[in-house]
Every structure is written in C-alpha cells, then in structure tokens.
Length: 116
Image 1 (tube, one colour):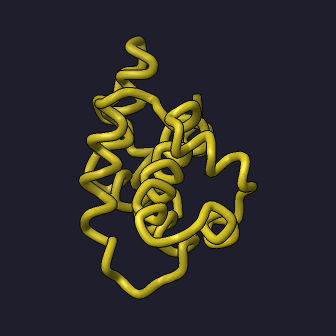
Image 2 (tube, one colour):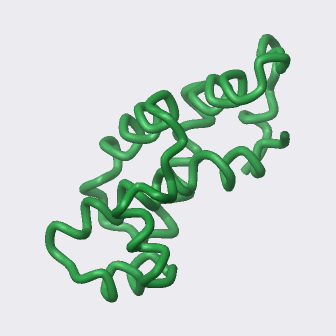
C-alpha cells in the first residue's frame, strides 16, 4: 500500500468522522456536508460510526494531530493537508502503515519525508 492510499483509505475517513462529530455540536447535517464537501448521507454514516471507524490506534494518532491545528484559521482542505504532513513528520503514518501491514519494514523508510 502506498502512502496516499493509506491516507485515503485509513486516515481521511477518521478525520472526516471526527470533524463531523465536532461540527454536529453546532451545525445541522446539511451544513456539515457543505463544509466538508461530502453528502448528507456520508455525514449521517460518520455520526452513526458506520463509516470512518478504523480502530482506536488510528483514531488516537489522528486525534493527537487534529488537536494541534483545531483552532488555526484555515480551510478544511488546508487542515487535511496539514494533518497529513504532521502525521508523516512525526512518524505516525509509518506506525499506521505497520499496523495495517505487519510485513512492512518501516526502518529506514523515508517515503513520508520525501513527498509534498
């Protein structure tokens, strides 16, 4: 699994679910969908935890990163990119990769540090 596939399949859904849950405290599902650029049905699934639940390990890594940037004034897309860069720079994405694919040898891997 390459880096971007891992991000899209395992991390982005968790980010979206956490964002939907946080936004649901003050917004309607229709507004959350518009804010995140997804459908209302997707928001409903995120809120019901039928989508974006990839285990406590991934969620903990993402939550830690989100907390660093939650109050920054930037668009949702900018926050996603910032969280991705943070997960790569801290080695968290490597940990998620190894957890997902135990045969992956992260020692000496520099892929996360060589992309955008």
